[in-house]
Amino acid sequence: MLQTATQNISAVELERQGYLRKQSLRSVGISIVSTLVLAGLVVISLKLSPGWPNVRESFFSGKYFAQSFPKVLEGLWLNLKVLLFATVGVGILGTALAMIRISTSPLLFPLRALASLYTTLMRGIPMIVLLYLIGFGIPGLNIFGRIPAAVLGTIAIVLDYSAFVSEVLRAGFEDVHPSQRASARSLGLTSGQTVRIVIIPQALRNVAPALMNDFISMQKDAGLISTLGAVDAVRAAQISVAQTYNFTPYVVASVLFICTSVPFILLNDWYSKRLRGREQGIGVV
Image 1 (cartoon, rainbow, N blue to C red):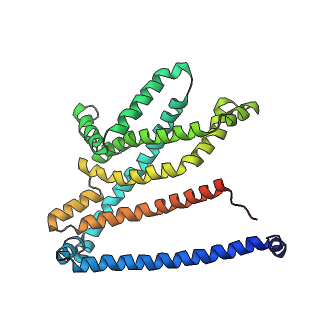
Image 2 (cartoon, helix red, strand yellow):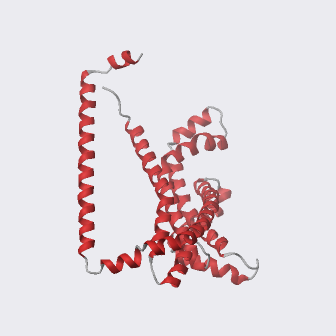
Image 3 (cartoon, rainbow, N blue to C red):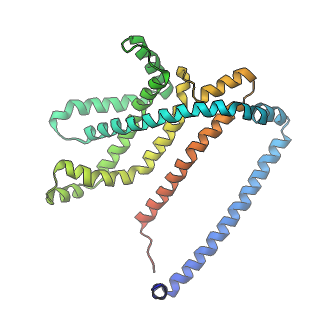
């Protein structure tokens, strides 16, 4: 079976594959050499800088790294919990807003107008300002009693990112060709079934990279809840800095946030590349 498949590949294709392998190996070699050269230049530049010893002691101290790591890691757990609940909230509210925006029913015109106004306003308010408005405005109403800062921060993140996600989803829904909807209805599917079975899967596949970028951005902004007093990774780093007068805890927080973001960044890059390959439809000669 394998021999038959090999025989079906033409000599031109075999030659092309060999050339691509050589080019790939050559590119990898050049990339490794250029990376090592750049890293060497950076190290030499740092070593020759007059203030490097002070910077190394203030930001990259092994002693303070080990000392602050447990507390910052404990604070990161709060960031991850906020991210989890915010992701669910953004998914629900963002999808609802997108569905309202693409609806054509005259009955839903007031909701469409409100959804349009909401997305316009929320995308224009800086995240830090929205955190202050929600974090200090809702408790000022004195309706719900004392609300944890992490909860208020989660609400602010949901309100902010649902506006961005709803616009990404709306663009994905509208990008599906109208013939898809017409074909589904001609097969006897209801309007709801058409949206659920035909429209949403195609839209999500097209906008998945953009949604993943929003998720990564939201993961970083989860650290802003420290402005409301929540003891997360950033606040734990601030407390350690105030106690030691050394900035290494900030580097610890940065490293932890990077470690949580990198898997999703790589997943996004892999999926984007896979999607481009599928759209280009590379065939065999």
